[in-house]
Length: 149
Image (cartoon, rainbow, N blue to C red; front, side, top):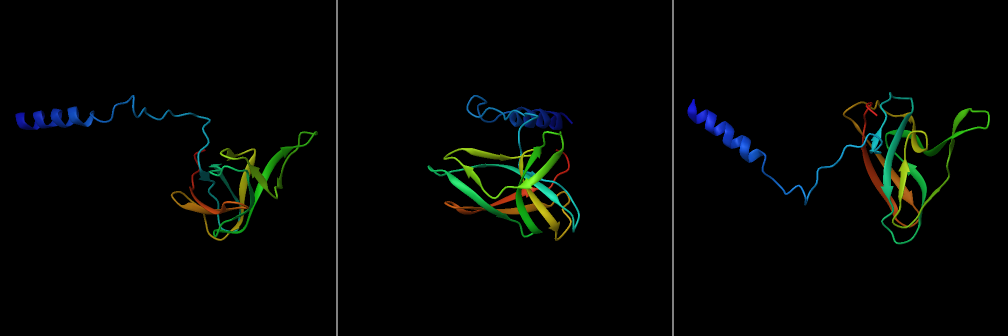
């Protein structure tokens, strides 16, 4: 019994050891932080995909199309509100991303619409999206499907 207690406290002591927190500070949880994810949905319906992409190039690049093998049609949309207060979405033909800058696709703004899904999207599935840029070419993303956003 005494050996078990000593072993337990030894493991507890060493499990707290690790990297210097000044060198690797813990990541802060920010409630408004954008995360890469896609909305659950069922076959034949629509889903949305949301993410942050950073242009790694030293020149501006243009996102000209998107594709997902899990949807019959994939488009970039932007949300808008009319002067009368009506909300809507419209397709965005292209998006310019400045050199070394981020583009944020989120709910209520720019986002990817996955239309006429080929299969159900449920947790813990993931969605593959290909972004096609004029300069960078094809960039593939894999986004987790989650309902908790």
